[in-house]
Length: 419
Image 1 (cartoon, one colour):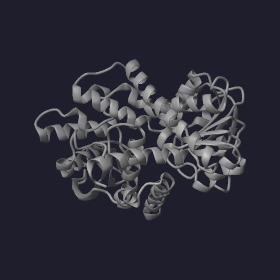
Image 2: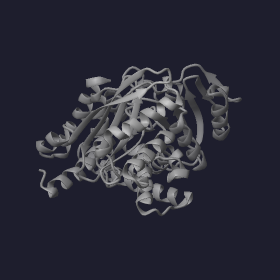
Image 3: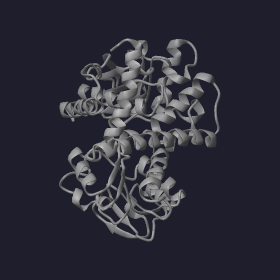
Image 4: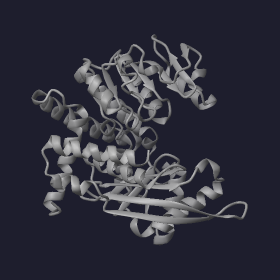
């Protein structure tokens, strides 16, 4: 990733500033983070060695509220990656209409190589090193790649010890027993399903009976498929690294989830056709495609094989810009990642609101709140997109989402007197 990732993010902002007709000062303000903190985290390993890990917290923009974004534990992560991810969080939170700025944290480590004790020491050390710049009104981290609710539990405990009292709202996506919310486990996939349903209403005449292919059957893809099936769609293809299951008659998603949990491989699902290629769902006959695996899956090389009319991005950046333009030329619609997969951060916002009040909603009420926010966000982007493309036929839904996100940031910074 490195610099190329950051350059692409900055290019995206530049494009949005140009399309939206904003002053260049907006780009200047968003192209640099407000604060970057680099820390060392010493950990005494199980064999007695001292290891010193490098950690980051990038606080990109606070015009709309406290910084918000995950903490990534990954051996290849760079500071430039972290800046790019924090910048994307600013855009995502702005578009989601929630009162957050953007932030992101990381530690250069392979968490799989640490024992549970070493992982706990690292997690607590990260909080101690950054304690002064975190807080439930300052910066509210959550999990990302390589981190999970257990790590959030250690972190919120460490922060609370340093404060001298319980501060539940400083981290989100905690275990439900420690002020988390049960909806968080499936929030991203559920939000994706809501957005897919709304987009299908607008472009395909409804979700009922529509064929859906899901590439990637991790947490996001599983729950995307599960909730779409509940909404009346027919899931015809699912895949993970073991390969693809294709069944035009429809896949039993709950059974597939059980198989995945017990065997670790979706290919062990008892019915349907087995295809070795994990990318096969991208090409099957289906009206709707959910690329929920990873970045750069739909490219100029394979875009001609994509048959779906509606592509709803569950992964971050699964479609390259050139491939996206090609899809639009073919008459397909791409619902962009930072609109479609915002269910996780919207749920984090709802959890934070609960934590600040020490008042908790039940699962059904939380889900209804999440659904309403995701639905309204999609409709807002849809309206702007249709208006924009009646004037400029080449614009994409991503362009419309970007302009809406920048508009909110621009007005907030303007009334604050920053611009």
